[in-house]
Amino acid sequence: MSNNTVLCDKKIILGVSGSIAAYKAVEVLRLLVQAGARVHVVMSANAVKFITPLTFEALSGNPVYHEVFDSNSSSLMEHIRVIESADLLLIAPATAGIIGKMANGIADDSLSNLCVSYNGVTIVAPAMNDNMYANLAVKENIKKMKRRGVKFVDPEQGELACGSIGQGRLADPSNLLESIKKEFNSMNDFYGLRLLVTAGPTHEPLDPVRFITNPSSGKMGYALASAARDRGATVTLISGPTSIPVPEGVRFVSCRTACEMNDHVLQMFSDCDILIMCAAVGDFAPKQIKKEKIKKKGKSSLDIQLLPTEDILKNVAAKKDRQLLVGFAAESENLTQSALEKLRDKKLDFIVANDISSPGIGFQSESNQVTLINKDENTKKLPLLPKVEIAHLLLDDFIKGMPRSEES
Image 1 (tube, rainbow, N blue to C red):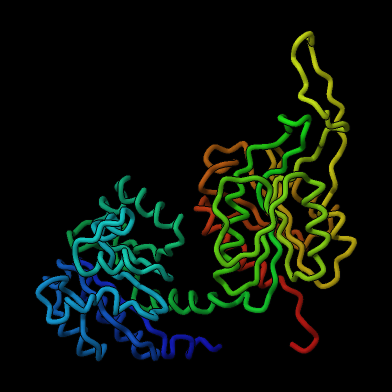
Image 2: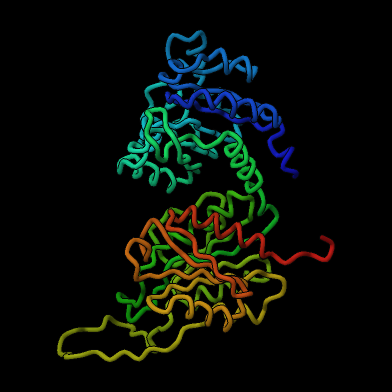
């Protein structure tokens, strides 16, 4: 789909909150309409103090929802009606107030009511004083929303309405338009592709009640499965034991040991286009599993003989046909070198390396910071971001790395 037609007939909700930058939302609306979008504007209680609803109504050709009560159609539940079949919600400008309401589920005016009701693709463009934008509470609210999959277009640096100079200016309307086009272009870029994703730890039993494992939460693998699903892929998620809810719309296969995961992957590999081995598979398992619980009584020590587990990536590499192979390397030292050795040894197309010794990005964390290395050994270090954002950035590269068919 060409960049010029990607917005044609898309239904976009433009949310305008109470900022001096509300006048820029008029230009955003004009650009969206010019690109062929059907735009419905929703204003917060304070936004109407900066610009009249009539302005947006005249440019959009649609009624503007700006009152919860006292509007002629408030009994029709406008905040529900306006979001029906909407393709995207853009909040521009977004004040600290509306960001706080969205992050915490507060619904006390027309715009916040709509935000609580809408569960589709959302892009937020903050605009506020630089000190407000740097405030820890605002930053925490933004992080919370990013973890839920909300996208942000960062404010720009420059002179602000208050006279100070800093980061807080609403992103240029043309940049917002490009962000929306990019979002629509990526929504279905995985359509028709079948992804096989592994996640979580493995449990290697010692006896009926004990096992060897690692602290992997599975969050990165689950984020990748959910992100690929959202971009149109048919996703199968093979997961070791975790406490994470199974993502909707994803085929789920549960397993416990490295041997079980190996069997599932080998069975399903021939039917996938991309294999993402994100699971933290145990490298060793006990040679013998005791049938009864091992007793402590009378023992001064316990010797356990461990044997290597199945090397799943090496096993599938021998069966590779057209598939894209992606591995993960969780390392505590020599990050890049260790990842490169794994990339070469297992003949991968990509490897994602993360330093589990760094605070805030290891196992169990909500965020991650990874280095992506492709088969040509080009490296790309991604910034510290919520895992759902890391997932989308990785998928951006994976889709570019897909083998081209002879017909294309």
